[in-house]
Image (tube, helix red, strand yellow):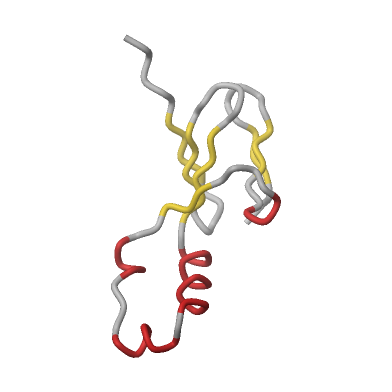
Length: 84
């Protein structure tokens, strides 16, 4: 995955999980449905799998657009709803 993208507003948004950019993981429920053998393996393999297979969620600090970035670095941008 590339480590940044340019938001529509022009801001550069960093996407590297290990550099403290306030990112989140979007975890699919299927990743949390564990068999008894997976539970017995412990937490480390589970955390590795969640990190490897989850999308990254980033929020632009300039315009607050939310980006969901998959493992192929496809980016879906969502704009915040206007305040009422």
